[in-house]
Length: 256
Ligand code: G
Ligand code: G
Ligand code: MN
Ligand code: NA
Image (cartoon, rainbow, N blue to C red; front, side):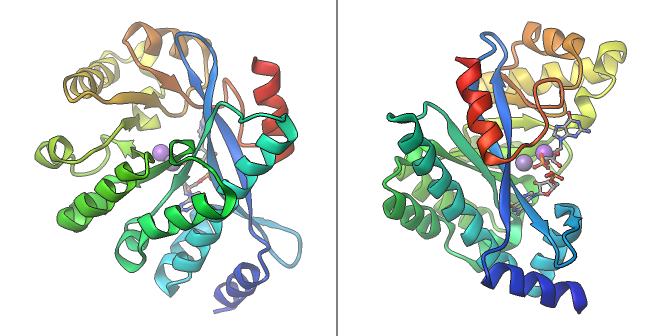
């Protein structure tokens, strides 16, 4: 329970922070938004990776207060950027919400509160859900997604293609973006099967009126190929690694 207790304290003392990784419109090279990722430096100043602390948060229920902090912090940073910029910064933050959060918390209410507290429009936030969040309770997912839609907050399906992609749910739910899992982008340049999968996800998205974001874009060849396949956005080390807030705002400014 050592790490869990430490995490509980970090959440209570508001010591978690966010890193931001740009989401790039492939056709124009413009920054469309940033994925906001939770970061935690433990008491020894060591960075604990989210792949380690998110499962602990999920198992302990700490994911509820953690997720609330992440969403309100994202809205707070956006409001701060707008102030620094002297005008609204034309980009959105995309925030991860796990299946457990969807069940245990009222995510739409959390988003609504964060938007109101920081006077941010709902279109400035996007919520990333995994397929497991939808499959777990499709009726709940439909009601939460509809509430988010009413706030103008968009929804992305994270790691798409790795879960139980139930096409009936996909059609029924108001999903705006499919995030093509990075396992399909990796080595796609010399793997015809991977290209075929990306092409299939792309045409599915087009039929359903959704956009696509390719994850894990690491090379210019991948970006060119993805763009040629019609993929809308790219995210990955080619463009930038997740970075702290100030660096991310500078990145946005320099991209203009
Ligand atoms: O940030 P990477 O930077 O290492 O993220 C690893 C994993 O942790 C990803 O799958 C990401 O979706 C997840 N993750 C990062 N931040 C959050 C968060 O705030 N909430 C949830 N639920 N997952 C997150
Ligand atoms: O599951 P999710 O998509 O939310 O996870 C985001 C994770 O992907 C973060 O851990 C982030 O650091 C990682 N990531 C972002 N870009 C790249 C990339 O180009 N290559 C690799 N290997 N990982 C990436
Ligand atoms: Mn994500
Ligand atoms: Na992902």
